[in-house]
Image (cartoon, rainbow over all chains, first blue to last red; front, side, top):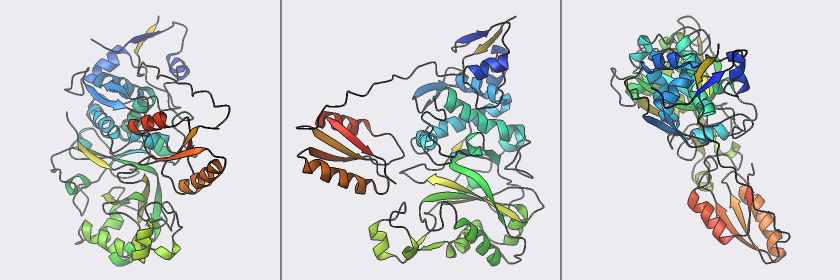
Length: 341
Length: 92
């Protein structure tokens, strides 16, 4: 049934230790990918096991559906998660997303997966309390499966092509679902032209989340000032047009924006997200001499560089900012792909 | 009892190439100066170019389109065909 070579661990070998010894692990124990488990995993997709999903950097190795399934088993996924993992692998390995650069950079970024659409509920993903934290199998293992594919199939390992100075928990697994039902706004995928019936993954090269605390603002304009003040510090307060950012707005903060469209919020934030050119270091990424000559202020984020999603528990006046990496065509572009069954 | 598992790896060892031996001298050689397009890479390479040119060594400047991706094959071939050695500037 399988194109993939098999390996026999010896009778005296502990399979968990044997997998560590072979360098397959990200540092946590793995589920042994037995033929039975991989076969069950493959039942989660209608796609043929020998279909090539992507060419995985950095070694540029062609990766089949079955090879993704092997790594998804090891990550702890259930079969119904596999379509999400496959789409995430496809998206990560595009020239736009540039997983090679995201992996190799000295910056602390990893591929972050945001899931939208009906599949969120179908596979039991968390979009509510502790959405960016631990405790949900789908959230935790889908991101891990993508990283294991990059490590094991692509050959991307820390200290080798991965040259991260500090790294980040987002390099282990960072996957969450948007709370669409409780949101005052259209979802991220709808904003990007997909129907409400479509399930999608959006990939974003980013760091870990940082909390934004504002428990005092009662007016939407006041809260927008707080959110913007914190967003200004992503990367560096003097940097403009450099790193795209995700703003995760929690339900209690979102409640301040009843009657506001997402675009209205974005425009309100934008008023407070202008960087004085005089404060810019001469070599700030994205700033050309021409820009400096003609503009007194530049926006913190490029057009489409601030992603707003709704997620989190229903109690707590917090939001979260997730700072990105070198953004746009010269670095990594966040992309949204529809999940196929 | 043994346990059978499927190989999760790409199963291929990437080709490792050794760099060419360093030239004993740069006299009469052409040196490529490759800017990876990070801030201040040009400052560093300008300084090196001046020093090399002062010693009568010919230099040719190249630049990657972006520091975030590997150099395109065409650029690598262009450097290989025109230069005896290359200095790559990371900068920052």
